[in-house]
Length: 332
Ligand code: NAD
Ligand code: UFG
Image (cartoon, rainbow, N blue to C red; front, side):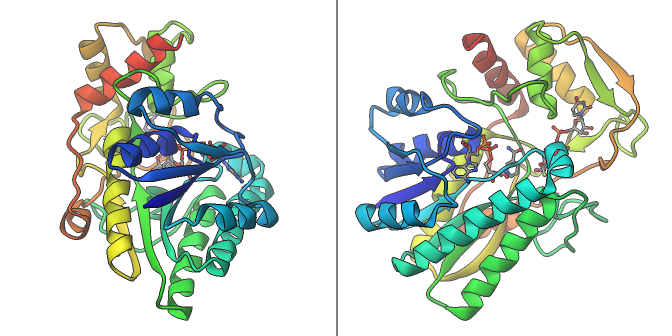
């Protein structure tokens, strides 16, 4: 079975390629390396002992994608390629709409042409906006607060309309909560350019003394200790969720949406304290004002993924904190 992985050199994509290869799938990656490095391919090979083919192409390039599908005879696609930085999407909305929508439309047109109608798509918990209740169920109302959000929401709508027009499609929309952690080997992980926006990449840089201290954005939220609560999921668990999603799309036709989270919420302070304890390292921090747009708390209902995909996250927060730091120490 051959799976084409767009954005397979990126953070979640690379971990998913490892899990796919270890589950016996053949893997072909299309990535333009706009937010990743080619050496990921060697690292995937070192971990799995198996080869993966990389096409250094833009998914928005119809001609290139058409040729790849002609040559590779792909069975199903996992579509990770896209831009994901919330702050950048506010300053460069057109770049976000262009890349995220164009890549998806081009991919779906090429897949239609080649009669490959099975896809798992990376959506995000960002589509729930400010949830009125917790845990978040897949049928909760959707809304967004920055240009990145509507790119995900629009793609979800496109996928649903596509299925309505042609019931041969089999589509899994996967809404990720907050992926952190790294591969145990320390070879794959998250390595953002510049000063990180997300919590865990920032914490590891402070622990590593690359940044002076963490700013905790507010301690007056309506949560257990006043700091923001999120559903952090180990990237390897998330990657395994994709294997289950692919098994599902290979088996059943239809379009369905699944939360991929742990169902547990941890506060910023809990994350900082756990990180310090399990890694035996100091993370100096100060409390500052809230970050505009942030919500109090967000965590998933995991019931649907458990029932329909037969998947649940296994790794605990200790593991997530250890593996995140291990990756950064090994790649200093
Ligand atoms: P990432 O930036 O590490 O990986 C994305 C990959 O896609 C990169 O390797 C990049 O080079 C590639 N890419 C981007 N545009 C492309 C294009 N037009 N053609 C070919 N390659 C292209 O991001 P990630 O964290 O691995 O996220 C993967 C997907 O999951 C994204 O769609 C993201 O929006 C979504 N997601 C991520 C998170 C998160 O917190 N990391 C949360 C929810 C959803
Ligand atoms: N935080 C800090 N200091 C920092 C960074 C973050 O206190 O330097 C806090 C935030 O206020 C929040 C929590 O840590 O309470 C998590 O923040 P992140 O930026 O790591 O993650 P978000 O939940 O804000 O958003 C992320 C992605 C979104 C995605 C969402 C759900 O950036 O794209 O998870 O998947 F939609």
